[in-house]
Length: 78
Image (cartoon, rainbow, N blue to C red):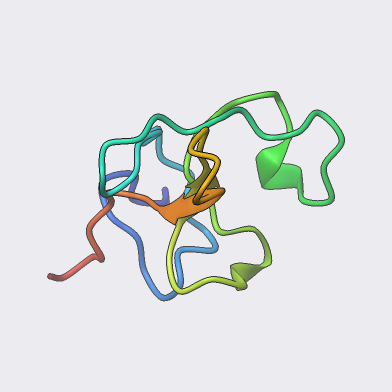
């Protein structure tokens, strides 16, 4: 069964959609080329929650006062 790319379930650790902006409209930065999690490989800037450590998908942003932010992706069923 294909994963839904328009929303996330649980903590979003399985989200693999193309969203690459945060709740406050920041553009996500590319993930490091040396990564621990397979879902971060490939040099993309898509929102992810590697290892399910946060409450929902997130990304790094360029704002020096806030290095990461949750993404603008709805939870499935809301």
